[in-house]
Length: 215
Image (cartoon, rainbow, N blue to C red; front, side, top):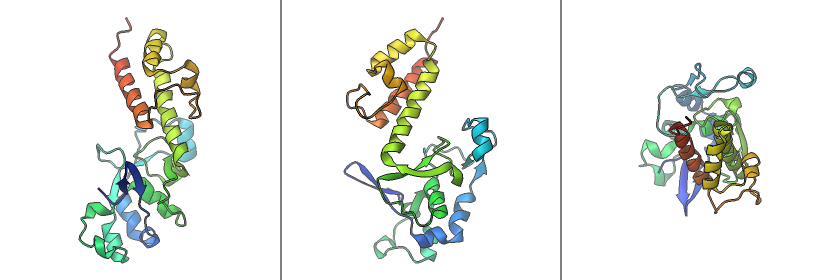
């Protein structure tokens, strides 16, 4: 378990980053020490998005983890924000996701331990931590956007392949309108699938598409 979150009864409880840690100049130095601009546009942002917001800021190392993170233990020590019971905790205990660190620094008055809100990537790149690519939205909206994006990727992949679309939508128990208009209020025909299950299914579908014989 790291310092970014604590899990209790299958629910993630995010820890806030103290204001003294946010304000210390070494906090940004630690994050940006391993940051580059995504010059190759691996995030596949549209030209119009890049013109308006710029390309993503990412860690140059190809990591397995979904989100890039940094340990802020040295900053916690410098500003005296390590609790007595945490004195012997390893550096990993003080790890925070980079996008949450950056958002907290540029939005110093906003607490980040409210589980009703999450830092959202408007670029749809979870590894990005460019300040103007981040916004705070409700947890439900963030999860809805995540699911819609996954379903949109699926629809784009199979839109012109009617037989495969039929096969996949039947396996996923969707009505066709539900693919186009995802809605948590009842339009989505399912068997109590969670967001992670939706995304997992979409990834499996994409693998199916890649191996499907269209000849």
